[in-house]
Length: 89
Image (cartoon, rainbow, N blue to C red; front, top):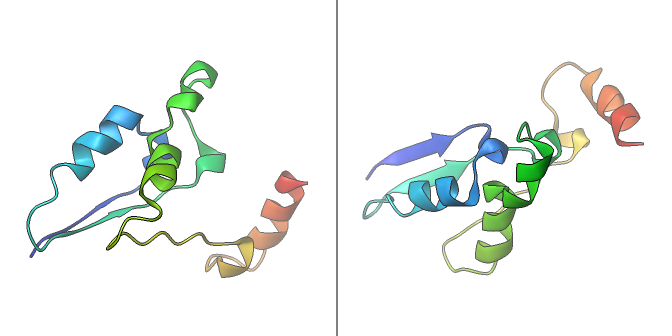
């Protein structure tokens, strides 16, 4: 069994996520980490966001889990949820 994770997945294109996911081996696990609100893709590429597309396409697929965290889940400085709240208003 093999495990892989891709951090900053919000910056992958749809084809990039598809490429990563279709390399999944037998009895392996893959974790895509990312925040679609922090996408670094050019404005013209944001509709091609692979992480958002994967969440939409795979959310009801058996053996696929999707976990969305909130600012309350933040394990960094206790100041971070307050900073995020200001940026999300």
